[in-house]
Amino acid sequence: MIKRSVALMHFQFENLGLLDQVDLELANLTLICGENNTGKTYATYAVYGFLRSWRQILRVVIEDEIDTLLKDSDQYRIDLGAMFDGKIDDYLKRMGKIYVGGLPRAFATQAEIFEKTVFIPSACLETDISSKAFQRTVKAGTGGKVLATLTKESDSVMLEVLVADEEVIMRPFGGLTDFIVDAIAEIVFAQHLPRVHISSAERTGAAIFRKELDMARTRMLKAINQIDSKELRRNPFKILQEIETDYAWPVEDNVDFVRQLEDIDKRTGELAAHNPELLVAFDTIIGGSYKVVKQELVYQAKGAGKQRFTMNEASSCIRALLDVGFYLRCRARSGDIFIIDEPELNLHPKNQRAFARLVARMVNAGIKVFITTHSDYLVKELNTLIMLHQRTEHTRSVQQQYKYADEELLDPAVVRLYMTATIAKPSTGAGRRGKVRTLKLANIYPDRGIEVETFDDTIEVMNAIQGEILYGGDL
Image 1 (cartoon, rainbow, N blue to C red):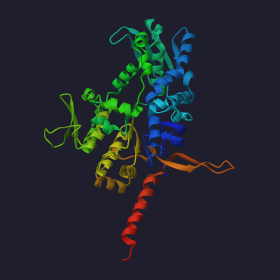
Image 2: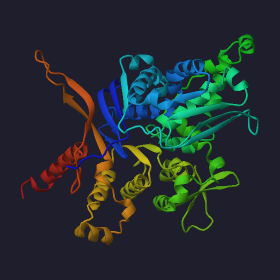
Image 3: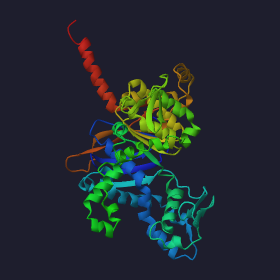
């Protein structure tokens, strides 16, 4: 069995929906497998929600501390080393406690479901505050006058704040404290909690109905209809308080992203610019490419001439991978976390294998990938990439024979696979031992790949039945 490399983050949950206990490490490649209705979505959505909202939560946690530091000092200088050295997990724990209160919004469900939920995030890597330089200028609107400058030199832990206009201190919203919190988020916490993008299992529907789905507008109209007109005139901010989402954050964010595709089509993301072969690998899976022609999103098959298909006309595979393609081409950058729910949706086994190879390329290009899957084909292909990573004379020969690129080989040390499972509680002495619904970490071997019991057990049963049919009767 391999020695695992250090992961990025550790997430501990208790009483999270269908899961009683979860210990989950966020690695370069993280997979969750398991039967239906066993808690995979709870774990995935909860992780996504925290990665999506931690900057707002951090502000709640540290704004009073920042205000106190500013009041007690005649200079706007913050010693980030004194504030955070050895204390990152304490801050993360406080952030996790606040996040639990927001889980009903993240899942768009009743608060009672998460009344007993506990969430403790912690960092797996040392926090490097000093090495990178940081500078940000605060302006009064686009092209406006400079209000303040925040600076941290390389090899320093001091955040210097130069105020050019007292207006930035007096602001009730978007004031100096907000900008300092943003700087701290970027310098201290972003190295543990990167940018996140999700492709939810509802992405196929989002692709075909994207023009009809304007969730922000729908929530706004619903809130306006529920607020008395006089009250709205007295307090226009009331509408913001009343807006509630009817969809889980991953679904809502997925829809919001696919509604922007015509606007972002001309952009080339950082990852695509440095790794154009990723786009080639993706286009091979869909057998063509997405284009925006006269503000109309279409799919054009390779070798089909000028024939183009709208998302209504295209196959379900094309719709299922729409947001993945645009994320890779227009948004992705090294260090991101990309979450995809059931990548095998609408894909032939051949393309499930190809998608596994694309995932390995993404991981090797610096994207951290988080997958939930039911696909034995995808996991077996990942196993092939893990075994080829041994780089022995024999595996090199196989790699060359089946045309695997070096960029597709997968280091088993950076992979974590979890299976939903029900296990016995540790014995406490008296009484019967109960059961715990949890995530079980799979074993990974360099020469055999990942042991995935949830697939192996089902395949063995099927093989036994077919063997009985073929060979068990009278000859």
